[in-house]
Every structure is written in C-alpha cells, then in structure tokens.
Image (cartoon, rainbow, N blue to C red; front, side):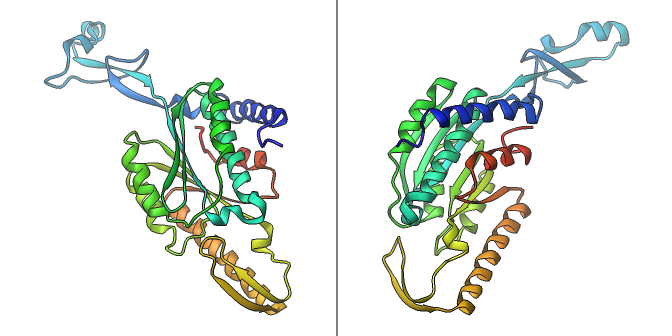
Length: 291
C-alpha cells in the first residue's frame, strides 16, 4: 500500500487547517522585510540620509513638520524550506519503519509550505547527497513530492558533514533546513549541524527512533549487526546490560537536545509509534514554520 493514500491526503489537509488556527493565520511564509519605497504596505518612517531616493520622501509629512522623512514599506518574502532526509542503512531498520516515518513527516510539513506558497525542496543523503527535488511551490506540487519520496531507499553509510556541505554549496538561498534522521553517525552530528547554523540556515532537527532502539526486548546470547557497515558483535544481553544501554541511549538524546537548544535549533524526538501528525502539530506549537 502506498504511504500517501487518500487517508494521508485528508490528514495533511487537516494539518494545514490546524496550522492556520494555531497561530491565527500569521504564517511563516508571510515574513516581512522593510525596504525603501517598495512593497505594498506602509510600515514606518526614518530620517533622510544623503544618497536616499528623493521619490521615497514623504512630502506630506515635510509640509506639516518640515522634516525630511523616508517612507518604509513592508514586503512579503517567500520562505525557502529544505528537507534533508537521512536515507542511510540504519533508516532501513525494522522494514523501513524509520524511513517511512521520515517520508510522512517530510511530506506533511512540505505540504504546509506548499499551501503557504513557500519554496519547498528535498535532499536525500547517506554518505553523500544521493537524490534531489528542486524547489517547488503551490499545493498541486504535492504529488511530485510523493513520487520523489516513495522511491527513496535506506542504504549506505552516513556522513552528515559531507552531505550538508554539498547541500549548502548547491543552495545559495538561505531558509529553513529540516534534518530528519536517526542520527547514527560514528563521526557525530555536532560539526554538521554547526555548519548549517553558521551558513545561516534556520535549522530544525527531527530525531526518529524505533521502539526497539530505546527499549530492546532481547535477552541471552545475541549477534548485533550494523546495518551500514555489516560489523558484527556477539553479546550476552543481561537485564543489567539492557538497563545500561537504555541509560546511555537516553543520555545521548538529552545531550543532543541540549546541544540544539543552546544553538536555537528546534529539536523534536519521536518514536515511530507516535502518529506523525502529533509531531507535526508539536512543531507548529513550538513555533516551527509559523510565527
């Protein structure tokens, strides 16, 4: 069955309606920048400075006050939203549960952007950028996005830093970068997220996990196999070792959340058992994509 059936379409349309209610229509796509003598909505005045265009002067105010003031207008600026989707081997775990969840999250959030006339694009990566969907806008483009996401597969090793550097070099227009991943990378995630931050992308982090990763139901002698490298490790899983693993996993997640918060990145951790629409609404309520 397709991930993006009629029921999914109805759900994301509902999410779009809810997104408008959460912030009473003040959508992130309506970010405004003040420019001299441009735009359609008057905002403010400022004092005249040598070199300013005389056509920007407010002569009516001058007639009343004999002060030279320049008119400022607010101009709507479209938002660029980039979805960076981890398609490495670890996302294939448990019959693509994490990758399918990532696809649904990316499609739902992307649909909100399309409806708001934002420019939405998708970048799939593992050790490098492997697939791209060029920036697109308009509600009707959602089916192109579905087609792109459907064909993505989880394979290969992860390299955040190399992938993000390629992404930034190919997308000069800054905006929101939504990273959706399980964040399993031997090199860590810090340098890569820092790179996005210093390249002036507004970064959102969606950390996806399978239930068996934070609460493994295994006991006795087991062989653990790395989905990306094929490395094998033989272990005897005792209750004490399982508890130690769970504590280490939780510490890792809390450390990552603290890292993101310190750099003003919105961080969302979600198990795949949580309905994706709940996380999408959580993103809205935290201020993601909306003012």
